[in-house]
Image (cartoon, rainbow, N blue to C red; front, side, top):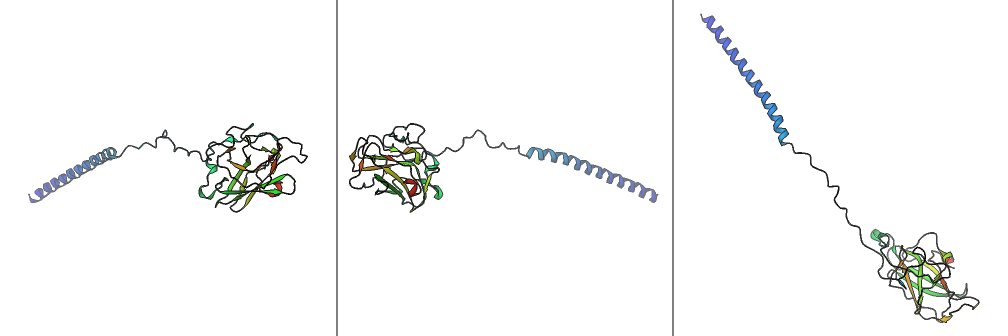
Length: 243
């Protein structure tokens, strides 16, 4: 009898253990599915990238000197001086952009504010003046194109020698100089319009060929005489090139 009761109890315990194990197994399975669903619900949707249509930063404004040159009119051709022997007129100053500023020590445009211009009379060649532009600033400056010259109250700037155009922009380090020569009159004395002049204004170009309205006013040698054949060279790095 005792042996039969023991056997029956053992069977019940085993059955109960099996039922508990089965229940735990089902609970674990159910929890895994719920966990997956919960994880899926809590996972945020992928965020959209930056709006491709957003506007870019606006570009900077004009950096070139304001105002106009001796006449404010456009020269013949493309922003450079007109033909040799003609009274070419500097272009109106416009937006020159980044190349006329000097952030981080880069080149800026040579102007009356960062240079000193002097005029001297040459013995050779005869009837010539020499313009010397010296960089008085702390950064390299670029002497673009040619100096636009106005003697006294002339209605047009002095003509330009197109054969003197340099192959590259003339850059002037602090304390260094650039040069331009001026033929003041015909050696034969046969040109018209001869007169003695007393004042000179030197206008500076930016890279695009525009001229500002703040000229240098160097002192002219006494008795400077010009006629209609007068012309000026482009700025040059070397004195010999200007002559």
